[in-house]
Image (cartoon, rainbow, N blue to C red; front, top):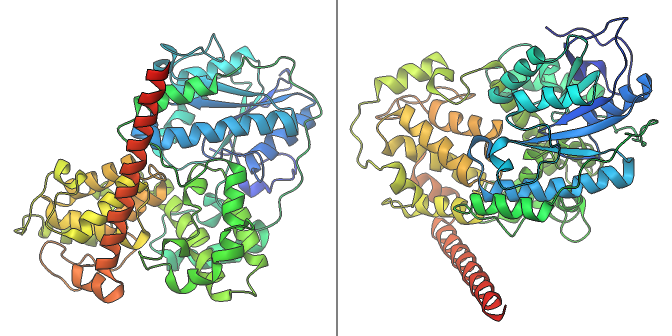
Length: 509
């Protein structure tokens, strides 16, 4: 149960939930710890702002702690390398601009070959976070918000394992309108949520306050982090899905992609978004912000605020961008927050479950295993191209993601298997996988979530249908297939050149 926030802060009270109230007259005021997870940035971070505000009010120091999960939800080198390189920059920015220490707490699996940053703390977050809080005698834990059940369950367990004198505040620093303020229930579609969000934008879509260094400094410096060794170890562990080279991690890179003078979305590429964003042959028409939004290296609120400033230049593009950035993204969070079965057939609407099960045994022209699909070994060159784009580039065009997932439903033994395979492949290869948007995207394509019933047909039942000929009417299919072949060839060549260079260095040594 959440309690009302007792005092007004620079963060709107509706953005904060008190999930554990440790207020007690006998309590000794200890430090504030911000347990960072989803919003990995220094600027435009409501959770960090709240942590500093509360520390200043209590006249105590504040620190940021990040618990490094052991390959959270199957993350590989692609995702871990991007995240860790961003965190390395974040630690530096925290120290330089705010003099706030950053503690990296590593799961036990990493401790076999790495030096622990906090020697007395190791294991999973349900163990490490309470131990960390106990050792630094914290009186307030601030967390950012994610609707994913693993983290929600982890927070519940942390509440149980920590002192009754500790308070825990959860801050939605990810959504423009906090998920619990936008709606108190599971919304049926974008149409039912849009009006609720729009009514609250005047309250929540505001400029961020300036964040100054906290009044009281942390007494000791955290042990140093060997970032290069840590990154190398994690990249090596997950090297079956290698890192990508087209997307530079970190807050500064995110702002450059948003509004940079060289190739920023709002400054150089905005006009094409309104008309070309659904064309897979026009990837530069997209914002390119999803990796940064997923890892919280840029605030969606900052993106929306800056987009509104330039709306008079391209109103059609800005309106379309804000619809995707705010309404559609926050609809995904709403679904995952209020629907515990957000990644299974049980989470589909009743009409969709019925129609899918009615047609689950329909005869399929093709049946492919997960391994065949993963290797793009199907009879459909367009689908193969989309799969290869994801595997080698780390990002599949949004339009192709819909076609890709629907064909998996058509080519597997039923909706449960189709959904499981789609989520597995999405989470393994997409740089922005393991995200509410990804789960809802698969659920929309395969289970009709946030959609309506359509004309009934074999296999799909009343789920919206997509096919090869329909794609041909929308864009140059052959051109897209050629584009992906070229992309794959270039990636393979860079990988071969890098391997040769590495071999030559070893020989020279």
